[in-house]
Image (cartoon, rainbow, N blue to C red; front, side, top):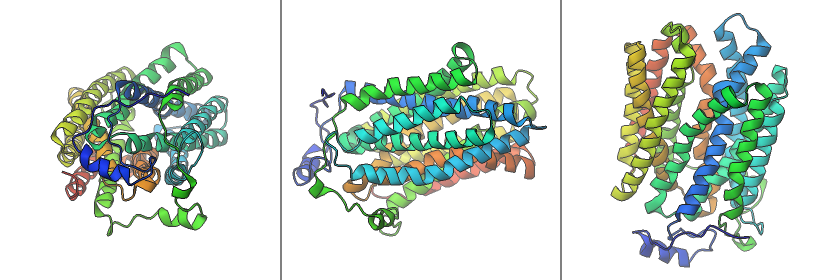
Length: 437
């Protein structure tokens, strides 16, 4: 099997890391060789497929499917039903991310540690989406969406771990930007495909499922993936797996602060974006709400892509992560405050740009920061799986939580104020990280 070979250029910290690498098994050694353009291109393409398959249902297909079969009297009932389905899936994601990450850490397959889980997760994700498109009842929708999210968790946990496995520290900001930039692009492409070329419930789900497989398979087949020797495998027992799920914030404070920051910022971002369509329709009374939502998504996407790539590369060059993450969290909070206090369509467009700047910067640099505070090379997959919980679960819980805030705390201004509070709290948390500049 051929492989995309990392480039020969060395990271600035290579001498120090090379010493560690010589004393560790290949699968557990700290990477010192920079990955090449081919590796990054395939990595970014895989994430494009993943985000299309996950975000298109969340933003378009799933809400329409729930609305069609629920036939509720008000938009809040639809949002609550959608939120309950998302929350159930979120509970399973809470388990799937760290458990499958821990199992990939212990995989001794001749195909490598991560590749079997990338392939298996992509297959489960795609098949579940295809069957989701055939459902005409809310129970079936809930079951197959939950299985789709489990597939997403397996796939993304293993794929994220390849950064720690194969990318040197001095390149991780730029490489991590190729997780975040495709997220914004994937959302627009997925929505456009589902509303223009592949219209209808079944065709929409089928299209994103097929594209998921097509875009993930090349990276899965061609990436290098060192095999773990059985002698170097961490204990594979239920007790070891359960005990490994706890990472002490006292023993590893920077891991704890990074995780807390990620949870807070992602909750803030999810609250600020999940109900934007309803904000346009019922908060601003916008007669062109659906068209203006697409404009907002485009503005948001442009700034996410620019911020993620530029900030990721700049953080590598300056060897600084914490400052970028802190600024990103503050920018998101500022966008939420604008939405709360100046409910105007033009201001909403400005806020979308600020939100894109902040979240794009946060996604790329925070991912690089997370890889630098992991407690143990032998548990990279599990620890990054725990980190990934802080990204996926807030998205799953936001519709239900957001609808509750709007209904019980005075409307959309309260929602955006809560979003801002979470963003500022995330900035405060990341400022406590000490081992990474």
